[in-house]
Image (cartoon, rainbow, N blue to C red; front, side, top):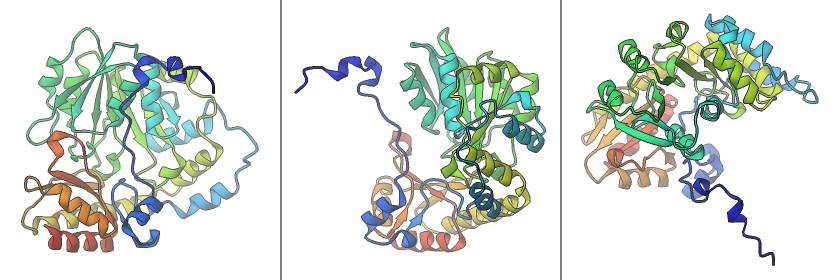
Length: 362
């Protein structure tokens, strides 16, 4: 047996890193509940219950997979430019917006730098900070889960490099106002607004990027477009940052399949907007029904999900009973959210199943 200690090759801060907690795959959920995959109610990953445009399957079926994609993403960036109204030189695409988050870290962060994160929020920012040897300064959101701009400003020191803000915030659903974003941009730090769910709120900071070189807006095709499995997202930012990211990214990070799916998606935006409207309507119906269950408090949301608060000490028990029923939701390790879990908005039948189970278990 080899005497080489492989652990010695691994960078010290990565040897026992706290990992990101992703959603379990459907087959594992079905196995836990003792049912088939078709029977589970999967509402733990904020996936689009209506799926993708019918045009995507045809487009992906006719891709020349033996040819490498364009490393400069010319067709992709031009299509996104036409779709968003943002110049192509301000757009960069990636394997989901998660990849662009990682690329921003690799471009900007040195070991020992800090990022500022308003929690509770999406765990990817602090995860990428750990991977890149940065420290995350957690600033608590206020009693309504709104970003506390003054507290963020108070957390800044000479080692702080990036402020992350998710809007609508995952999992609380809060939408940042232009005034809040302006307040963060005024700090002079790099400000990253993650707009993964913006289509469900209609609120975006994209128009502010042209006036602020330190502002980045991230978007994804996973939620509105329903192509989470194909991994494509994009960032809107200064052309200078775009060019530097092109210099350091993997050359072929947007696959030919993802490119074809994106083109088909953008050509069928009206269809997807119709699905978006169904999701928003179902979100409001879900909130109304949850409000009618004693012991359940649904929070307002600008996303395709609803954060629910329960009486102290009940959330874990209810969550487990729901899972045994085949209804999978999202719980959190955060101390502040110990009495909460998040419900992704599904179809009307999904909503009915969730509400019926909660009426039984709460």
